[in-house]
Length: 254
Length: 283
Ligand SMILES: Nc1ncnc2c1ncn2[C@@H]1O[C@H](COP(=O)(O)OP(=O)(O)O)[C@@H](O)[C@H]1O
Ligand SMILES: [Mg+2]
Image (tube, rainbow over all chains, first blue to last red; front, top):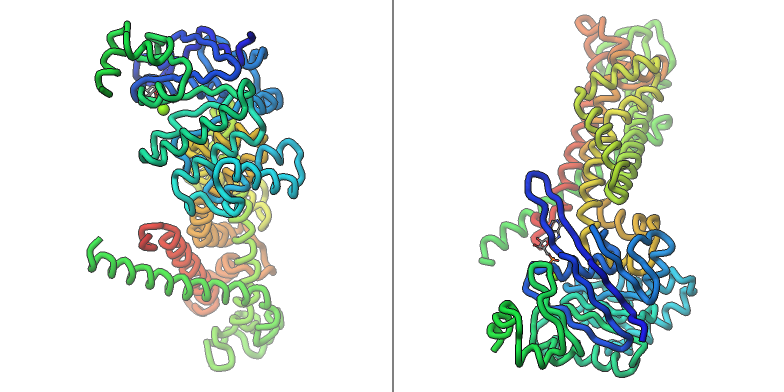
C-alpha cells in the first residue's frame, strides 16, 4: 500500500542572532498509511509543532522531503500548495485562537469551500451539515469564536478541517487545552469520524499524553529533542520501553 | 477585583466616553464649518474695502480687517477648507501608503522587506520637517508638492507599525488556518490581516492629524505650501507677518485658528487612543 504521507530526513535548524544554531527537528522520517492513526508524542519543546508546521508547509524545512499522497510538496508554493491543502488539514491546539476574532465560525468553516468556487448558498448548507456532523447545531455558524466554549470551538475547528474532505488530518495537541470531560468528547468525535471514513482518512495525532495515545492510535513515534527515539505499537512500547526517555515518560504517567 | 477599583474603572470609562463625545462633536463642527465655509462667512472674504483697512476687532468685524479692508473672520473661515481638507487628505494618503507598504513587507518578508525597511530607516534618520522643506523646495512649492513632501517623510512610521502588527498576525493560528483553507495572499491581507490591525493604525493617524496640520501650515508659512491668494492659514500668517507689531490681529487670527484646530484634533486623537485601550474601558 502507498503511504498517504512519507517524511524523510526532515530537519529544521533555527538560526538566531548572537546564539548558536538550534536544531529543533533532527533528521526524522516516518510513513503514514491510509486509514491509520499515527501518534507523535513528546514533552513540550521536543519539536512536535515544528514537525507539523513543516509538513503543512507553514514553515520551510532546512533539509529533507515531504511526500503527500505520492506528490513531493517540499518545495511547493502558491497555487500548487493550495491544491495540496485540499488533501491535508489541521486542527490547532487552542481552538479559540484558531478562528479569526472578526469573522463568524461559519465564515471560517466555509472559507475553503468558497475558495473552491462554491456559491454562498451552497456553502451555507454545507457548513450547516458539517456543524451537525461534528455535534453542533447549524446556528453556531453565526457565532463569533469568543461566544462559544472551548469544546464547541474545537468541534467547529474539526468541521472546518473536514470541509474539503482531506485524506490527512493533523491534530496538534487538539485536546490539550480542554478539560478532561471535554477532551473525552472530542476524542469520541474523532473516533466516530475515523470509523465512518475508514481508509479515506488518516490522522497524525500529536499529543504529550501517552495514555490518550494508547487509546487512540495504531502506532506511535516518540520524539525527544527533535529525534525519534522509539516507535511501535502503543501497548508494546508501554509494556516494554527500550529507550530511557520513553521509560521516564511512561513512569511519569503511571 | 475589589469594589474601589471597579468604581475607578467605571468613572474613567465614563469620562473617556464624555471626552469622546465632546471632542468628536467639536471636530465634526470644524469639518462642517469647512464644508459649508462659503455660506458661513459674514462678508465676502475677497471683497476689499479701502475705507476700512486695518480695523481692529469690533462687533462688526470680530477679527478685524486686513490691509485691504477684507474681513479677517471670513478669511479664516474660508481658509479652514484648504487647511482642514489638505490635512485630512495628507493623513489619508500617508496612512494608506504606509500601511500597504508595512503589511506587504511583513507578509512577504525576505529581501523586499529588508530593502523597504532600510529605505524607511533612511527617511527616519533625517529630521522630518527639514527633509520635507528640502523636498518641497526641490519640487518648487505649492500645496500639492507640500503634501507630497510630507507624505515622503511620514510614511515610514506607519509602515513600521503595520509591519510589526502583520508579523504578529502571521504567527496566529487563525492566519495559519486561513492559509490551509487555500486563501490567496490578497484575500488573507484584506479579510484577515487588515481588519485585525487597522485599529491601532487609525489611532495613530488620528493622533497625527494635529501634527500634520501644523507641518502643512508650517510649510505654507515658509512659502513652500499654499500660495496667495488661496486662503490658507499658514500662508495667511506668513503673508502678514510684517504687520505683526502694528496690526497684530491679522496674523493672530489664522494663528488662533491653527491653534484651536490642532488642539481639538490632538485631544480627539488622545481620547480615541484611550477609548481603544481595553484597560480604560474596564473590560
Ligand atoms: N521560530 C522559532 N525560532 C526559534 N526557535 C524556535 C522557533 N519555533 C520553535 N522553536 C524552538 O524549537 C523547539 C521546539 O518547539 P515546538 O516545535 O513548538 O515544540 P512542541 O510543539 O513539541 O512543544 C523549542 O525549543 C522552541 O523554543
Ligand atoms: Mg506544540
